[in-house]
Every structure is written in C-alpha cells, then in structure tokens.
Image 1: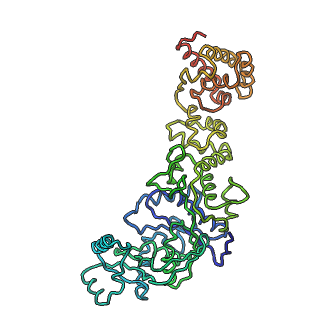
Image 2: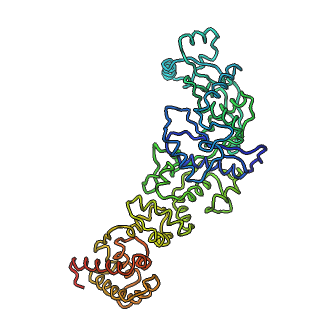
Length: 504
C-alpha cells in the first residue's frame, strides 16, 4: 500500500482516557503515532481525554505515563512537558468545547435537546415494546423558540446534539481502510455536549485536533463506525480535516473478539494472557521486545525481518505496510521475541535488569554475584522473572538441598549416585583453580571411570550444588559459589543419601 507524502507538518497524538492501566492495544496505537511522527520529523502529542467523569480514575494518569515512558514513547507536547497548544487535559478545556458547541447551534448545525433521563428511558422502553430500532427519536430537533424557553424556565439543562443529514450518504476517506460510505438514515443525532457542560469524545477530539493542528489521526478500527459523525462535524465547522488512519485491533489468540480485561484471553494451555501494560512491566518483559512485537503487529517491517530495533522501524514507518485486517494476538511470538532481546543485551545491562525481579522475590542481591550469574541465564530465560526460578538459589541466605529422588538421575540408583558424589568430591578437593573449564576437565574423566554419561554425572552434581533440577550449568555454577561451598553442598547430598539408607 502506498501512502501519500504529507503536505503539511506531521503532528500526531495519542489521546487515552485515564480509566486504569494502559491496554497493550492502546500502547500499540501510541507506538504507531509516535513512529509516524518520528519518521517524518514531526511532533507527537499526549492528550488526556478525561471528559467521562464517571469512569475517571485519579491514579490512572500516572500509571499511563509510567507505561509510556517505560516503552520509550516520549511526547513532544502534553502533560509534564507543556506546549503552545495546551492545556493537554480535556477537563481543563471545557470553555472551548462549550463555545464551539454553541456556535454549531447558532449555525443551525446542532440543537439543544431538553429531555430528562426519565423521558429518554420511556422513549427507549416504547421503542422496545413496539420493536422499533433503538436510538434518539429527534423529538427536540425542531423545537420552537417558545418551547425552548419553556423548558429552560423549568430549569432543564439541555444536551447539544449534532443535526445530521436525514437523507443521502456520508462518504469518508481512510488511508488504511480505504473509502467508506455510510447511509445518513442510519446515523444518530449524536450528543456533542452533555448537560453538565462536558463534551463527548465526538466533539472534544475534533475541536482539539483542529486547535492542536493534528495532521493525522491514527486510532483503532473500532472507531470506524463513528467516522461519519466526525466527518460531518469537520464539515459543519468548515475546518480542513486531518488524514484518518484506522488501525487493526489485536484479537484474542483464537481470533474471536478484541482482547479485553473484562474477559482475559487465554493461550493454548489455558494460561491467562495479560492485557494491561503494567502486567507486562512487572512480568519481566523488556520494553525493547514489547515495542518490537507491537510494531510488527498490524504493520510489517519488511524483508522477512522480525527482530529489529525501534530506531530501524522508525526509518521505514512511512504509513505504508499498515495492515487493514485485525489479527489474533501471537502471544508465543512475544515470548520468543523477549528471549531474543534478552540475548542481545550486554551482560552488565542484563544484570541491572535482573535485580528487580530477584529483589521482588525477597532475595538479597549481591552485585558481584549478579554480574557473574547474568551470563549464565542469558541464553536460558525468555523473561526476566524466570531468573528467580532458575538462579534464585545464588541469592538465598541459606541453601535448601534437593530431595534424594531429585539427585538420582535416570538409569541410576541411590548407591551409584552416592558413589559418584564421593568420587567427585575427592577430585574437586584437589582442584585449586576452581574455574569452569578446569572443573569440567577434572570431572569429565569420571564418566568413563564410573560408567556414566555426561548427562548423568553432570546432572547429579548440578542438583546437588543448586538444590534444584532446573538451574544454571553445573561447572559455571560451581565457579560462582566457590570451592568451599561446592564441597559442602556435595557432602550434604551424600549425607542425605546416607540417611535414606545408602551406605556407599
């Protein structure tokens, strides 16, 4: 798909509602807006749409900002940054929306409607009883000046509704979905300004996009049915429209329905898949991997390349190769990508990132040990949190030995296991240079002597010195914990076997 070269300065925006933690689909929308602006050397704005006061969460703004900054999506204008077109919080812009809603009324392109909630409910009940299509019946669209004055004398606070055409079609253009047309008879006289003076999304985003000089509106395709209302609003105001780009949404892994926190999706094994960004942040995902994954979900980097830095994606993100169709959320690919990005980190960088999950697990992290451990887990973990299960034993105050049955390897018995441990203890006691290769070369010959294979001998030693069946490699682990501790743990394993009735 080709994309027209912008003819005016590129200004995009991400305009979330602060109702909770940021949805991963929301971050993808923000990412596409950010990449598009960066590609063209434009501006990316963060605007907070908090006009729905019934769902407003006072703590949500901070969590949203945390998620954006975690992903590296810095904004050029918006909260905590400022800018010449602020304020960037809609509840601080009410006078502007009221001014332009009243302007529409004065131009006979909108009208006040005075129905009470009870009257609207009776209207809906009657529609249901008569099996009529739902929606506002436009009964206040043609009120006389006297009727309006009477309602206002009763103290009624009106809403302001858009006066949509009753015939014909509204033709809209979208750079992702193509040209779309809507029958006007199916459109509602949408509420633009509520009785409390707060705007709806429909009015607020058009007014804000105009006064903030937004050039491209990139949002989820679920907003496409609302596009004719917005198109008509732009035309009612007589303002030049931005270019609309409705992006595909991420569907549940089974391809059925949008990913929702109300009905959390599950993977093929029945595990719940996180939907909110803070779950990914605390579950050990790297921001580099998440943005790589999201950039390639609904857009294609090209050249069959799946692993890339976001800076390289920005160079290619000119609006082409955005995919119109929504697709299933490939959760397995995200885990794979995260592992690949873990392996691309410098070991010291990885060590710094591993500290948080280890400390969150209640472990005391020694910096020197952490730097030694990081390279050992780097090729073995997919998420940072997996370090706890694989290498948390390095940081425990006390060693917890594995049960006897875990020490004994396949096709071995307790007596053979105890004998192998004793012989290994003898050999290791004579090793002065307690480093990985020296330890390997010292123990390797014992496989022939004891009639074991590498998997058996190295495996029983690993379980003996780590206390677990899945861990870091045997000899690298011995080097980190040191000679004295290694020998002591082998002795403890032998004593456990002895206590279980083994005489060696």
